Image (cartoon, helix red, strand yellow):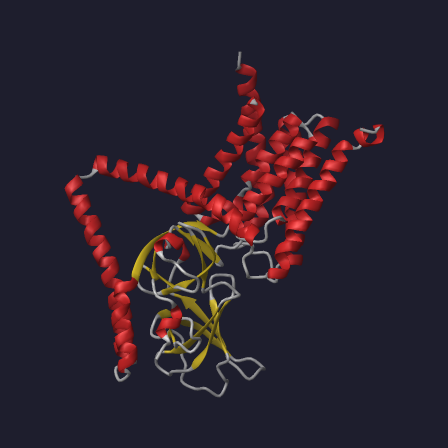
Length: 159
Length: 280
């Protein structure tokens, strides 16, 4: 039960932040993908099944923000969630730099998958927002590795 | 459960999830622009949450302001702001109508009636993949919103029109910069008629202006013609920023819309079915 509350809270916070960021400046949503971070974080913590299910849910939410076809981001995130859970079991991704590379690769894979699917389905080309979107994997990975480090430190300090 | 299924449980769940997403996509894609029940249902679930978050933070912001500023002055200011907003809409629409159609009594009368039908709305969400395509506003069917209703910015310039899905208190607005948007327009000075198409990058292009048309110049204002029977005539849209000659029969004309999506927090919906503008 506690796990579900944590996941729900995580998703809600990201939804809230995305809503606020889109209101503050639309460029902010292009710069980092918070839904990917939630998916990857819980996939590492709980495993690939949790990761893929959460990826599907977060993907639907992301699709809601993009007013596009529901399922495009969902599909990319489902695969990312699964990969994050599966790979994190095989290798130690806790050191900061390794964690950064791990998230960077996952977010890049997700971004490529999403862009391919989007271009295949939509008649429009992917909007790059003055090329800002290409920084998304790097900034998301940097933000993720810092946040994950803080979460781990916070967890360790818990009695 | 058989042993091989147990071993492959994770993979089976992943494949099942992927299949569900594929089915979801394949349900929506053939429908194109038409919104389906699934899309409408999700829109009705998520949009009120978004609306709630924005309203919550707006109220906190208001409390904060009230705490620091003199209450009376602020409330007066709010009333005046509202009045200015409505007057600007009226002024722009009527000035345009008078300038362009002084002789056309019918259109004048239509535009005079327009001010009674203005509904201010707040933008609560932008399209995350391309913010030049659409926005969500905090008015819906409960406020009487219908598809194709015209949306203007706070200065009375054209922003777009209401498209689906529309929930009880939220609706999606297609911006004129969306590459699937097309509007019947003409240039104010030369009266060159064409179709304004969004480029999905924040600008629009004025199509079908023959290369033989002379007199069009940069900086010229573009206004709606009403010939698309969607947008009423006389609404300011933008101005010409570049004109280039191409090998084709037409000019390549770039138009910069007057509305700026970065400051698009408040809009005005003309609460009139567009068909009514073109009746009689």
